[in-house]
Length: 194
Image 1: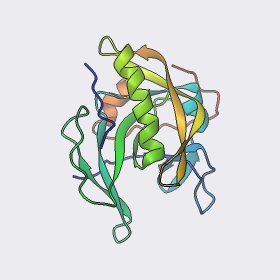
Image 2: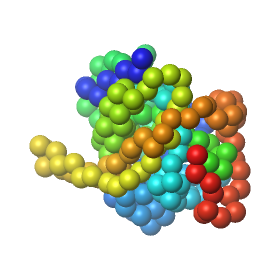
Image 3: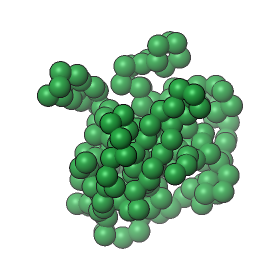
Image 4: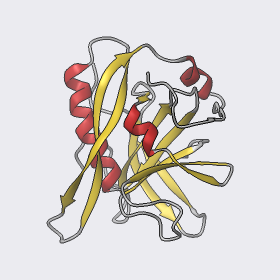
């Protein structure tokens, strides 16, 4: 059974995937895009998300993240399971997720990010996963659009609209990524879909 709590310890190895609701200030990623950082190079992987990527929901984690300016990284306190959130450790901590991702090329990455734009998108997808999962297959997830979210406090964000295209067997690339990330050169943007 798949459980996900969308209510109120260390990081991963990467390569890291990020959602950019507003784009990056340094101009290396546009608004409403996904990027992946490999060896200090940022690649726009939004077209791959639109074609479909596999989410390893069996290895997915949720928790609280706090970005440290001193360390220049996010510190994490992971929940014990997906079905229940731990108490918020402090005012500046934000809900987040860690999801291993497999691309059709055999490449893998980790979408490990905190913040409302990421968390709300995954929380919406979790409703589909809970309703549709019947065995141990993994979802091929496509980004079909974006949706805005306005907060009562006056702020807003943009989330990726994620939908399950189909369910597939676990690819070998995700098994390999448990120990070391699989990096494969992609020659063009016409890679096969799952």
